[in-house]
Image (spheres, rainbow, N blue to C red):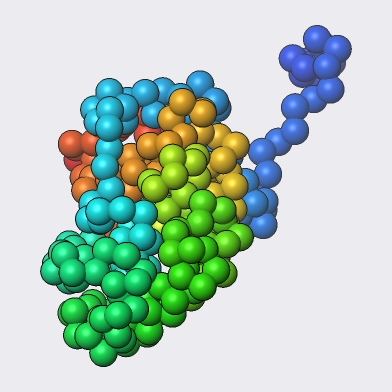
Length: 247
Ligand code: SF4
């Protein structure tokens, strides 16, 4: 009669360790867990972005902090190219809040009528210019709370202005930054604020100033929403996204 062999000990038990947990497979667990990359991997990504484009520039045109603020307010749900086309002649005659208010809402509306939501945006440009004159001596404030109190200025706009006009490390999360931060697991999140706060923690300080430009440009020209151009992607070897398509 064959003798019965005792069951083999599991490797973990033999090493005196508690058995490793099985990976969670429930739908809720899968939804919960998109893990951010390791700090070393995130550094490698930004080193690659920097090597390819050491001084990335935003594509919205402006001549000072005020026109930058106006351009960003006008850019909501519009392309930078379309905004530049409208603002070039506008900023040539109105590059301060005083000059913009003097033009008046009707004239401003006429200049920006090729941009989506132009009626509301023209109203906001005049209202924020008046508020800058009344409350900030005609200057653009360099504090988030003050910026976000201006008509038409939300968190994203404030982040762009703080970063570009005042050199502060902020992460404006637009549709491209949101997608890339998730695809590359730099700062996975379900909404722009989660991603922004994740980027604040994850992006090493030396890359902080340019991070949002690198991510925007990467998302706009390479890692597109529907068909990412993976074959020409400078970080393809570092990417493990499910959206990656090399063939
Ligand atoms: S390999 Fe593709 S999916 Fe990954 S970052 Fe590059 S373009 Fe995006």
